[in-house]
Length: 420
Image (cartoon, rainbow, N blue to C red):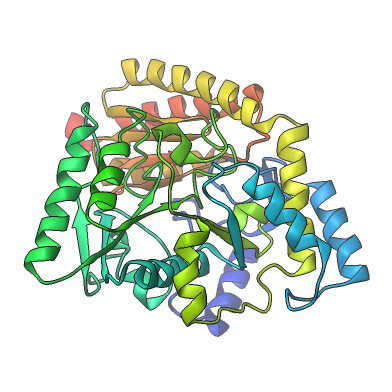
């Protein structure tokens, strides 16, 4: 590991004096980031890093149009949805225009966690059930309830929650449906009525499971047959990241009852949303009030509308497909030359490269950081490299990633103690 310089040491010491010990940092050698633009982040010494990890700045860090429209709206009006304003209505109309017609109403929140937490409450009210099914490597948010539905955090499973093995390596989509039906049977044996299946539609925290398309359909049919609902968590795969459609669930030929999204919606501005079938919302709305002061505020809506405009105008979904196809091909070429790569999975600009151990994945992530390329890891064993650059990444920058990964893998192999 490189020895941190004095400026990093000073920044770390200052941070540790005031921030709670719950905070964590990326990389063995942390980066003191001071600015970012497009797909590049810059440290305090002016060194730049290719960001191939952060899905939140979906149209690129500090996009000038997003910044300008936030500033313009903030200078005119920033208020909530208990006044009649145009921004929330226009944003709702735009979002509903990207999903099947059966999904016909929107509620705004500030974060993906708030969206998912609200989804749980809606599903309970609509079905009368309290049982939820999540995958064994899932991450769905930070509330107490969602932590109990996020096994990858190591937290205890919440009451009424059944954990299903993620569909890694399955060739027959029916197999995941069989697993979900087994969870439903287990609920019933325990006297629990199913409320919903909650799934990140590219299984990002499970290690990135993108194929085969359609694998979710039998599972959704199973939860519907049991009287439950399907919640599509689109915080990570949404907004065109998979390259072939706007939302991850669309790759699987299903129509969710509830769709949740998070901060990529505003390129990092704290804006999120829940989209649902109106009949699913009706029981909850009849029995409860939900008001989120900053959910759907006019400045947040301006940010989100800018993101939708940029994705469409700059054809970023098509860019995700083209650059993603190049990356998949190049990474599979690397897999043919590096035995530590076990699999390459993904769609568009959401790719997982599974290595043969957590230790190697950690070494590669840190080795890439030292070469100026930022990625992360995921999966139950944290053995899968997670690659999710902003959608504005171009082929030349993808080539830099592939070259740096090749060199890092060679270095990891040379330093591997198992090779004597």
